[in-house]
Length: 103
Image (cartoon, rainbow, N blue to C red; front, side, top):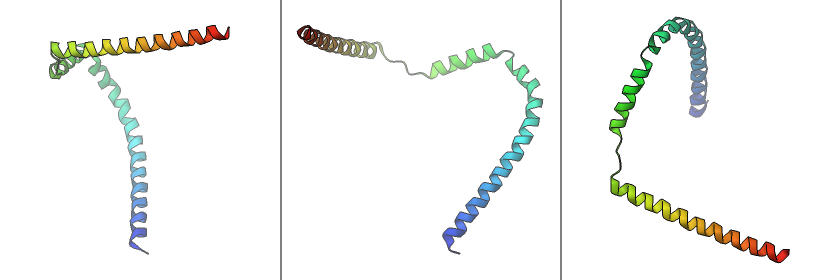
């Protein structure tokens, strides 16, 4: 056998072993889920307070834009909306004119 074939066979054996382990862990995990149901009920208490604290801590990490940056980006958005609005108006007018010629 060549080295490549040995490596492939070893990988296949490892994959089979991993699948067996996953199956056995799945059986154990099902048993543990029954035990964890009572723990989950305990975790739900105070969930709103916990989520609020986590949200506040995440908002402290946010890098907020400056007022100048907001104004610049708002101006860019308004300019693009106007440009595309004029483009759509022009296409609509052109198609309306062509439809008028056909009728």
